[in-house]
Length: 119
Ligand code: SF4
Image (cartoon, rainbow, N blue to C red; front, side):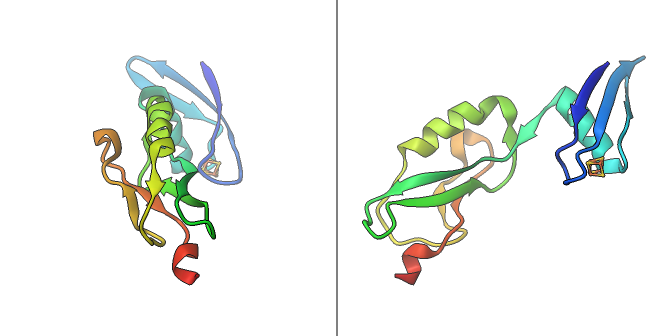
């Protein structure tokens, strides 16, 4: 039996999950999403990443970014290394990718601010 806190919504339900006869039994969840979260955490945990990248523009030396879809939890460190290599040299705005298909994971790293376009 493993205890987890559901991070899908602010309720933060305390979940208990265990495997019995090849099936995952989840309790403590208030909704179906909690059950999905618990099973995914036990089998293939995924996470989003929010970070920043550097730019050559003095008026906005860093830009906020995030991954376009969740990535495997165990690849967070690798993706952060790729994000840390980025230097933005062209004007870009919200939704523009600074890395496409990062490490072949099917996720782009996209800008979440249009501050450079507002200057
Ligand atoms: S189980 Fe449902 S209600 Fe509880 S934290 Fe997860 S998503 Fe929210």
